[in-house]
Figure 1 (spheres, rainbow, N blue to C red):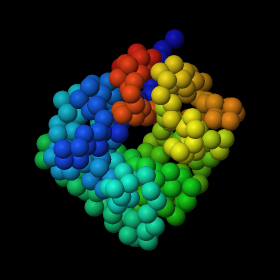
Figure 2: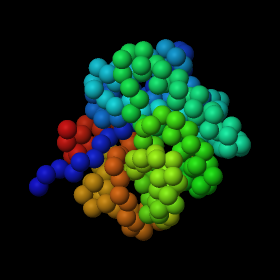
Figure 3: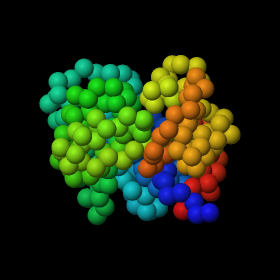
Figure 4: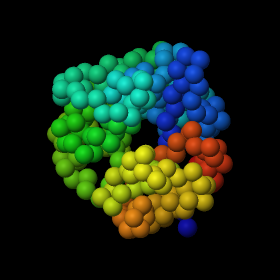
Length: 246
């Protein structure tokens, strides 16, 4: 039986100055898509440049990973913003990464919002539309959470002619409505390798996942995210690489 065609992605370039986050050098060879921070929750120009060069070295697609302006909270806090203010903020961030890519004769392949913004745009269609509006300026797909009810999001994205990439998570627990369990809930983040591998096997082979409350929900994903700061990230990614294939 042929292996399913699904990609692995990881949030990258989230260091800042002398402060280091993640295992980018070790993780990059094991993934297909790198979501590179754009400076509003983490990263700085040199970190962005070095992460882009690393992605180019391993032929990994480069995505922009913008957020609310929340560097103190690592982008995990909701920042109330007017619709146009949010759109302009995202254009600013993605535009910086796109210019940096072009300086290395590379290109921006997609956009994946970070943290609270990523979660908020699934809960609030007006926030989602502001994000799509920004994405439409760059002519690249927007990555969002794969969950059972995607029709309203597809309708908005179609109006702006923005393709959507649907993402599942290897190391996060799901709620019954298909959204991610908040990080402050017990069991929301999977750290055990066998739990992560089992969740991805279910996603890839059967298009389903067991929620934190024991329900089974269907999810149709194009890509799977593994967080590089997971203590067992390297071992998990290697096993997932073997599971999914090149």
